Length: 416
Figure 1 (tube, rainbow, N blue to C red):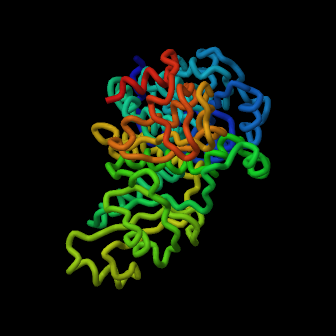
Figure 2 (cartoon, rainbow, N blue to C red):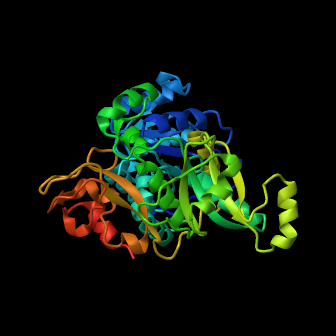
Figure 3 (cartoon, rainbow, N blue to C red):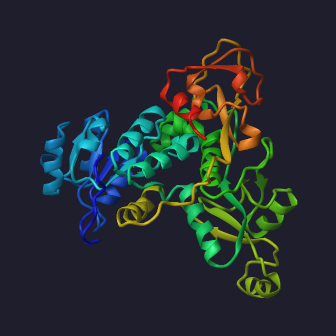
C-alpha cells in the first residue's frame, strides 16, 4: 500500500490525476489550470490524443505535455510541474507524487476498476461517478478506510450540492424534512434516437443524454444522497411534484411526500437549482424569524440554491480531501436506497439488457426494503431476461440471469 501523502503545507500545489476526457473532464481540467492551489494535472484516457487535446484547450503548450504510460516518467513530470497524459489508468497507483485521483468517466466497470485500484493503494479519490457510488458506495468507503485513504463524491453535481445544503441546514439548527432534486422535464421512455440531437447540441454522449432525459441520472443522484444522509426515497411510482419555488414547501407536503425523504420536483422555476425543505424542532421560537427571513409560514421552509456548476465546484472537494478534511456526506451503516431497473418498453425473454442510458430500462430510486428483490439499474448491462417484462414494470432479480463473472455483479453481492 502507498502511504497517502502527508502535506507539509496547504501552500503546496495539489497534483490531480483526472481519469476521463469527456464533457465534464474537459471543463474540470480547464478549471484546475486556473486554480492557484493546483499543479498541472495528469489526464488519463484510453484515447490519449483526446486527453492531450483537453490539456491544450486548457492552455498548456503542446510541447510541454508529457505523454507516457511509464510510472517513472509520469512521476518525473509531476515533480517538474508539467502536464501529462497517460492511456492506462491501472498505472496510476505506481505514479509517485499524485495527491488525489478524480474519477470522471461515468463508466460503470472501468470507473469501478479505477476507483478500486486507487483506493486499494491508498490514493485519495474524488468521484464524479454517481452511477458507481449508487451501486457500490459502501464497498468503496470500506476499501478507502482499510487503506488509509479518503473517498468522496464531488461538489458541483446535485448530490454534492444537496449534501452541502443538508449540512448547512443542520448548522442552522434545523432538521431536513425533504431533499429535492429539481428536474425540468422527464420522459421515462426516452431512447437513444430521441437523445441524439440533444447530445450533438450539448457535446455530451448519447447514453448520458438519455439517462438525463429518462430520469435515471436524477434517481441515481437521489440514491447517492440517501446513502450519504439516511434520507429515503418514497415508494416506486410516487410522481415528482409539479410546483414552483414560491409554493414548493406546501405542494410537497400536500403531495404526501413523507418527512425524511429524498425526492424531486418537476417543471417550475428552479433552473439548475436544488432544494431542501427544512423544519424546526422549536417552532414557537424559530417560526417568527423564518417568516421574517421570507421563508414562509412553515412548517416546512424552502432553502434553495439556484445553481449547480459541476466541474467549477470540484476543486473545493479536492482541497477538502487533500488537506485532511472529511468526505461529503456521512455514509449510512448499510445502504438505505438503491436504483431499480424499470422496463422502458415491453421486454422479451432472452433479451440482453443494455444498461444505463440505453433503450431497455430506466432507473427509479427505491428504499432498501422495496428494492431488495429488484435488479439494480447499475447491473442491467450484465443481465439477460429469463422471462418477459411489461413496460413500466420493475425488473426483479428473478426475472434475469446475471453474468456471475462480471466484476460489478460480484462486488454488489458482497455488499452488506
